Amino acid sequence: MVTVQYNPFIPEVHADPYPLYHRLREENPVHWSELLEAWVLTRYDDVVAVLKDKRFSANRRQARNRFVQQAAAMQEQGGPLTGAATMLSSDPPEHTRLRGLVSKAFTVRAIDAMRPHIQEIVDELLDAVQERGRMDIIQDLAYPLPVIVIAEMLGVPPERRDTFKRWSDDLVATLGGPLVAPEVQERARRSAQEMADYFRSVIEERRREPKEDLLSALLAAEERGEVLSEEELLATCILLLAAGNETTTNLIGNGVLALLRNPDQLERLRADPSLTESAVEEFLRYDGPVQATGRVAMEDIEIDGTVVQEGQVAMCMLAAADRDPAQFPDPDRLDVPRQDNRHVAFGFGIHFCLGAPLARVEAQIAFPALLRRMPDLRLATDQVEWGGTFILRGLKKLPVEFDT
Ligand code: HEM
Image (cartoon, rainbow, N blue to C red; front, side):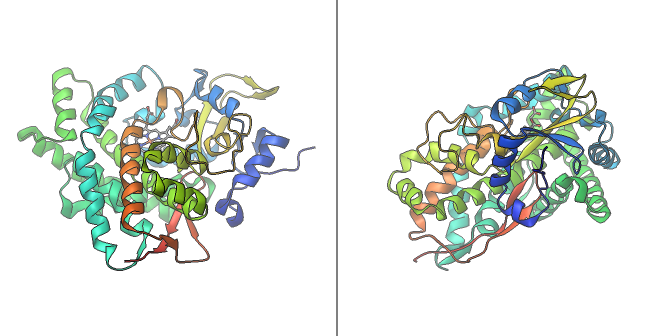
């Protein structure tokens, strides 16, 4: 008799879903959620197995699940994504083609070359608050940093950044599953349309006059080999924006909160910046920005003795997998020097996050700069406020104080 239920919409669960993930994993690791009309998987091994299994599709439109269909239909009406699949929701061979071109711009080497410029952006953001002795980590650092970086990569002028951020926020807000209100959907549809119109005009400009940006590089490749249609290119630009902003914001926000709640780890990282790389991986594991991703069974598939029927959705709870004691010793402990940290915060298999090198570099620059420049960083509130959705979990605000 199963009593544990997965309901991520209870505020206490959203504020700290990990005790529930543990219960699910122990009592009912392949859990049918009536609420989500999906199987909820919480074991590391099951999550990885589904993500690498070709019998599970990333094309959610095929799902027999009304929320997923609702979201897919909304995307289709959304203007720029009409007809054009993105890599995130396609299977090979389309996935290979759609990802191939963009992946050249996102190699570790290409992103590494951006380090000095990302450092400049972080310094500017921190300069603006340094004298104040207080800041909101989200508003002043975690939120603007990724949008400035990706907007520049796509060749968007600085004066359009705020509009850009609004578009991407509106799109991301639709990832909330059953609780997405019609007005939220309508706003997303309008923003997607505006964003598409904007990109169409920039694409025109870049065709006439290429620049040194990612968009020009994508266009050049498209013109040479007809690899991407214009609609696909548009959908790709929008995907890059939407996929990279709130996620990176949440990595920085959730990571700073984790450090502030674990002062010994904060001290350790401050004293030894060479731990930055492992610390960023640990933030991703400990409280990842993307809690879950779904796949659709293309045939009946058995997982641990339970049959997932063709057309049903398996929700891979990445954040639960990353706290599985069978994979990570002492999983609820934040351990900045943690070794052998094979977390799935960026997913697993062919859809492994394309932007991972960029997100990593941004965080690897932001954390040491913050700890170096803001001594005695401390929380300026007793209660943090969680926002986002059950899939993209992050803070609305994170007020901190520091000595000037
Ligand atoms: C800490 C920040 C980030 C996290 C935690 C994250 C997480 C993820 C996850 C879990 C997936 C796999 C989804 C699935 O399997 O269904 C994914 C895919 C993807 N991410 Fe990220 N992401 C981050 C930042 C970024 C950035 C900065 C970009 C680009 C600018 C980006 C672009 C993408 C793209 C294009 C995909 C689709 C890849 C594919 O389908 O082949 N992400 N990300």
